[in-house]
Structures are given as C-alpha cells and as structure tokens.
Length: 222
Image (cartoon, rainbow, N blue to C red; front, side, top):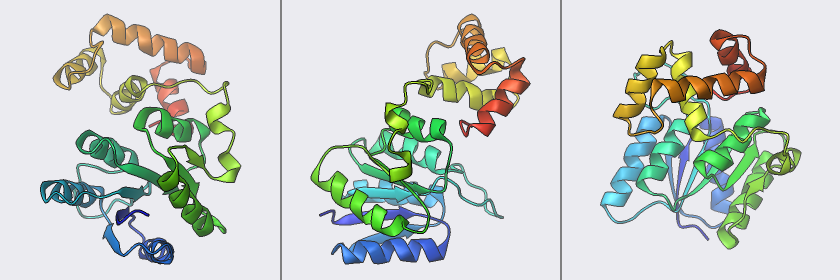
C-alpha cells in the first residue's frame, strides 16, 4: 500500500474524513495542505529530501481568501506537480460535474482516478486508492464510468485549454502569441493561434470569442 500521501483540500471536515479513510487502509504518513502553493512546496521538499510522496489526493476548487497564491485550483497544482514528479499517482476528489473537464483531467493531466464527493464517496475513494495501487488503470466514480469511452466528447488538448484560459483573461492574439513563446509552447504564431480558436468556435458553435469563453466556462474547461 502507499506509504506517504498528501491531501490538498481546503475544508477541514473533508480533509479529516479522507485522512480517516487512509488510516483505515493502514497508511500512517499523511500530510495536508489547504493551499495549492503549499502543496507544491511540500512536494518539492519531499523530492529534495529524497522521500517523495507516493500519492496526491486533490480537490479542484479552492476558496479565494486574503492570501495571494500562484496556483489557484487543483488542475494547476496537478500540472505543476507532474512536471516535478511525473510518476506520482494522483486522485481528484471533487464535486465537479462537467464531463468535458473530467475527461480532460485524464487526457491532459494524466490523473489516475476521479472520485465524486457525495454520500458514498469515502468508500469509493478507498476503493480507488486500492485499485490504482494494485493496478495501472484509470478509475472513475460509478456515475462517470462512461466518460472516457464517450466518443462524442471533443478530445480537448492541453494546448486548447491554454488558449481558452488566455482568452478568458482578455489577451489578444499578439499577447497570446508572446505568452506561448515565453512558455515554449508551439505552435505560437498568431496565424496558427487564430486558426485554432476559429476551429474551437466552429465546434462549440460559438458566435465570437466572448461566446466561446462563456461556453468554455459552462463546460468547466476554464
């Protein structure tokens, strides 16, 4: 069984419930983080000390408060963690109900399991932990069992998510191009970016960029 686990969750009640479930699985080294930035620092320190975490369990939504953070959601945390420790197992434990976003978590961030918070979520979480430890398979809560097989869902790429996020921040083409170049992301030419955005508008039947961002937010893509 996993030996060292980090829980990224800002609600004490849920964090305590998850920790209890881990204890019942005979896991003794359990760490907590209420902020994504803190979770990433703990991952970095564990790697530096040569005692890395085996598993990250993270929520997606973290409430904004007086503290300023670089990482504001579970998606950003998992992406940052995977760059540091690609092999770490990851479980998302969330109330997210957008199938597009859930499928993107598997396809673009390489998570191992998604468990919906709810009445029977703790037993499902324990089962997911046991399953991904014993076998290299993708695990979803029962209500989402068909998401990965649903071919009607657009295969949204990480590149598309990046474009949509930059558009949602009000960036124009030239600014998006510069941002992609500075991050080493290709293609980053204005023409290529415009073509990709137009392709997304056609697929989502969006009338313009504002409409595209509105649809993306409704689908939980940004």
